[in-house]
Image 1: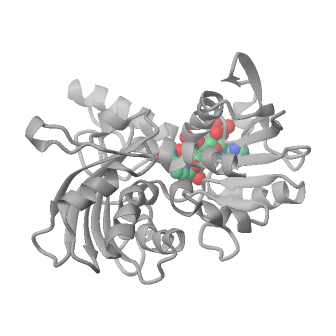
Image 2 (image 1 turned 90 degrees about the vertical axis):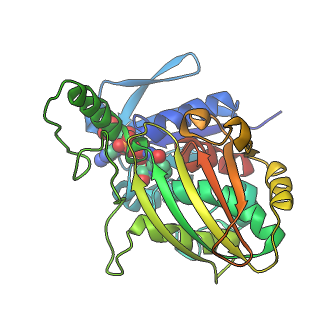
Length: 332
Ligand SMILES: NC(=O)c1ccc[n+]([C@@H]2O[C@H](COP(=O)([O-])OP(=O)(O)OC[C@H]3O[C@@H](n4cnc5c(N)ncnc54)[C@H](OP(=O)(O)O)[C@@H]3O)[C@@H](O)[C@H]2O)c1
């Protein structure tokens, strides 16, 4: 008989939390009981899981009693404070925030790349940054074929990456813009409707943002490649769901488009959509709500030696968050 698990979701009412509920249900994860946890603001609300309506409980020190696996998707501050509480209660925590990702004893896992790292966990496993996860789904198989040195990349990140409030903000701004009304911005420093913001996360002294450095830092840890370099510009775009990344990668060994396509087409979790002559390439609208990421526009880079350029799209609420977290739980 399959063992079933007592599950808690911290942040069950948020953009990632709602997807976690759906993914657990869709993949028939063996759930014995489910505790949906939010802030005091969610008191009286409920979420749906299978055919049940589950009341949302307020997060507290007793939230993890008799819980086997706790998913955290309520921001870094909450994870920083309550992941240790969950571990103390002997739950295994799977954390979507960035606070523990670079701690040496915390595995940072994309199951298609470094599933074996899960074995070293001490009660906590971190889920990678969403843009990094989607980009590495294509970079890693190419690395295995040609040996990656580094990448130059620009991301096109959907507003749902900033949570439920940002989705509402774009919706509201689009409505107001079409009626020639003033646009007010609350989540972002500027209106996002009909605009692009070359600004995701806070700026560092180097001029890069924190988000931009995650591809290099987390990429090194996940691929076990301490020399990997990534120069990234992260851009927020007025797309509701699914991130895309334009990548130019440099390799140690000579590359060919034919071999690259062959390798990418065989990668689990990734689909090769590369028929430019038929206008077929990955797009946010074709990957939204899909588990698989897509890669296309594969070409020999004309600026670098041993370089390939390509374009990846993926649903960041799934592969960049909820799906990857549930895949980690499945490994456990
Ligand atoms: N969105 C993405 O694509 C994505 C991808 C990868 C990782 N992440 C990470 O996942 C986390 C959640 O992101 P999100 O996009 O789902 O955000 P969100 O839509 O804003 O949801 C935030 C969730 O956290 C809960 N929460 C906030 N303050 C809380 C408190 N004091 N106590 C208990 N619960 C509290 C909220 O509950 P209430 O409804 O009660 O306020 C809500 O359920 C963040 O760490 C984010 O960095 C997000």
